[in-house]
Image 1 (cartoon, rainbow, N blue to C red):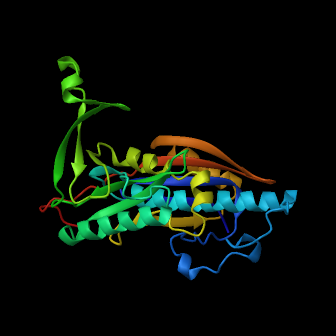
Image 2: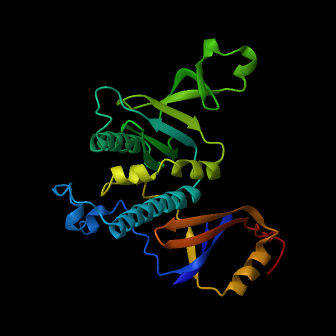
Image 3: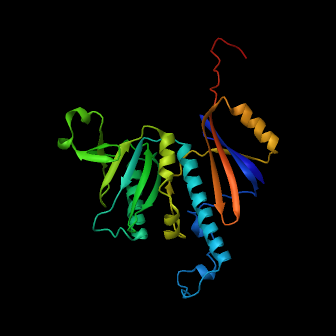
Length: 293
């Protein structure tokens, strides 16, 4: 049991204080579906009971399961993303030769691209997640590092915030403020967009936003993210604390806080409040060669 978790990301730590005690969190990985048991019969794809309405308890349980799966997926992606430094943010779309409404087909194309890229970049690090459009189509976003042999192709397109223009349509005074968008070499399934990451921490938050409740429902029992095996992982400590001990820790941290927020989780009758506190770790003083222990 725990009501406090500490994530050590290297240069920073994140404290998570929970208003209610959690039982041991197994943090099941949604990608390891083959090791999971199949869902109960009333959730199989081939069931033929569409005329049967779920009662309130069943609806609550179903919603709770969806939210739980959403949270597990987001937390895993965030932990991986936060524990590593990233160089590039990538968007991969699909042309008319690919059925962009078929999640399996899109996923297979994306995986072929990853495998091909890794052959010439053996130390490549990546996290790739899908985005579900309102019309049901898919494309993918990823964060990458250690890809020196990936060809960057000048797209002729510049971005400014959420807007994009061709170079000839941008006022000269504004051009310096715009960012050139490159296409990613070896990607032959549609349009690709690769941009330099300026802040790995902000990118870790941003990549998680694509994992939505609608995506979780649409990709039930399917992979929702892809990661390389060489990613750093945070060191996680779980503690069960009395309220006064929580407050003592918060008091000790108050001068080191670089980010803080509170989040309410409500699923059916279950409620919990989580307080996130990020701190910058103090750098260790290195002894000079002339100093003795």
